[in-house]
Length: 267
Ligand SMILES: *[C@@H]1O[C@H](CO)[C@@H](O)[C@H](O)[C@H]1NC(C)=O
Ligand SMILES: *[C@@H]1O[C@H](CO)[C@@H](O)[C@H](O)[C@H]1NC(C)=O
Ligand SMILES: *[C@@H]1O[C@H](CO)[C@@H](O)[C@H](O)[C@H]1NC(C)=O
Image 1 (cartoon, helix red, strand yellow):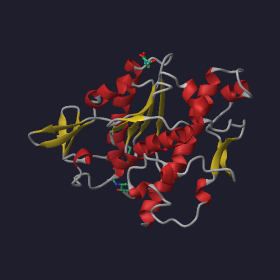
Image 2 (cartoon, protein in one colour):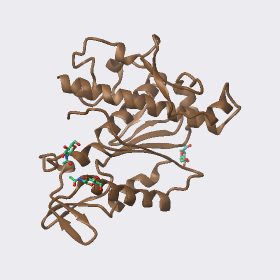
Image 3 (cartoon, protein in one colour):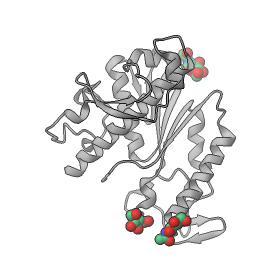
Image 4 (cartoon, protein in one colour):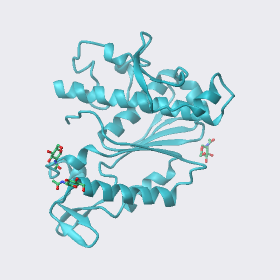
């Protein structure tokens, strides 16, 4: 259970950083239209600290229908303290507006927001859905999407621990460092893409019996390898991913976020 609690904490922690970035970037686009808009647009959102806020958390995990696994809900899993739910990201140079679900949906009207990466990404999708659901309970849920119909906003997810493709071939599943086409097909419909990949690159046992995590070989250029230096493998994969972003994402109409180095995550 201890490990589950850590996992849940991690997802919340990262969720809030991301949320801060989101809110700030959507305010940044409409600089001046709201209190502090202009200074937010110029603020370094990445430099700051976590501050205790008695008014948090912003949603009650017990009443959120999106927390898919017991292990992702610290309270249900028996964590006795609740202070960890009360931290808010505070950039040094500005004050972020308090999260307002309806305002967020209004600003994101017509958009699809997609989380891509490992289970931390799935947690983040769920957590943002919980935050918004607390403000606007009317939703439609289908396999990977949660849709807030009145606002035409979709929150989606795509599980891709390595970002690059894992392709079943005769010899087994091959992790292709230079191919992202297969995974990326689903990413094109998103207006906002939040990527994360780090943890799985350092795992020594990729052949765990969970189908979608599994690879038997790594393909690096023309070489098929049983394994290789994972730091180098990750660098190659991220270059492949970055090339995809450069040639498929118009930064004038879409937004891309990437983060690595997730917290301890014991799944
Ligand atoms: C929802 O948003 C999409 C993408 O912007 C748009 O194509 C569609 O017409 C919108 N649907 C409604 C009902 O407004
Ligand atoms: C993961 O990182 C640790 C600590 O740096 C290292 O000792 C280990 O060899 C790495 N595992 C793999 C599979 O690269
Ligand atoms: C893996 O590659 C990185 C980057 O080139 C290097 O710093 C590191 O020493 C390598 N690790 C091993 C175990 O060879």
